[in-house]
Length: 144
Image (cartoon, rainbow, N blue to C red; front, side, top):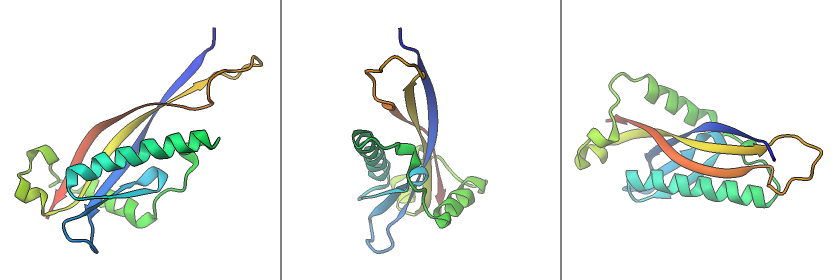
């Protein structure tokens, strides 16, 4: 019987209004340097999850480790730090639609389960990495 090792990784998603496209939002998966755009704050988180899933699958198909991608620029990590250290942040679910339109930044963690076979001299039929699931864990945002 093959032994498997499972490890959950928590990845940060940062969503900000698109400066160049009023009414649009930019979502960044900071840990993997992925960026996507959407027409609403909620859709931006969905698009980030889709982009994350596509990037992981693509990397696996190309024989690459999806977790060795280049991280987002330091300025976006600084924005996340500022958001998380703000005692006045709110949960997105607690905001009215009007308040959501004035959000300066929002963040969530996404859990990615990584499954690897244990090292063995027996040839494995499994890919070295198998994408298991995405789950939004927490959301917090910084109202204007």
